Length: 260
Image 1 (cartoon, rainbow, N blue to C red):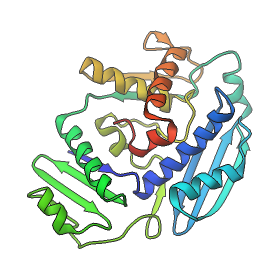
Image 2: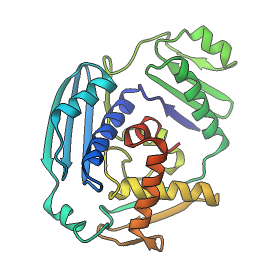
Image 3: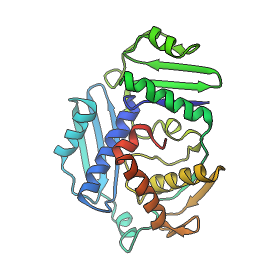
């Protein structure tokens, strides 16, 4: 059983904006320290950023308008806590505590990801999809149910009728759809809006990729300041995560669909 939401779901819009903020920080600094939280809905986007990078509010506003439209913005930018900054002063160390797991994706999970992308390609609007064995539930805004029922025979489409969605009628927040992003690999950490020093990002990515490669679950834990994770230098874990992010096209693109 798996749920996917598409890039126009309000929670994913918040993730994408947080990813864009992190991209801005990396455009300024090779190894910035940044954490961005986004709450969006009903014409307003609230953003709090803790960072070592010198970010420009105008650039963040441009990103919000590009991703979510001409919304009002409420942006707070504050320096990262001095103790957290000092933790990274002598090299790349684990930026937070956490427990993490990677789980190999199932055929059902891959199939729903494919279906979600197919529908989004034709209907780039707020949507959510569920696959549970033979049961396929499609909730897609701004799309005729009849067309989707014909395309996906036996599916349940828009059970309450055709609808419009998005941030005009609903709110979204960063990291609220971790199950949609990570399937059975859900942990206590949030993937989006953080730099690569954070274990929430790098160790989650590392565990996920290792699980896909080896074919069995991978479980890891870490403490803030750790220099070694899974018997390899933490800097190497960060490098693996950076390569994955770069292959996708940056933090904003990563936030569109999560890990897969």
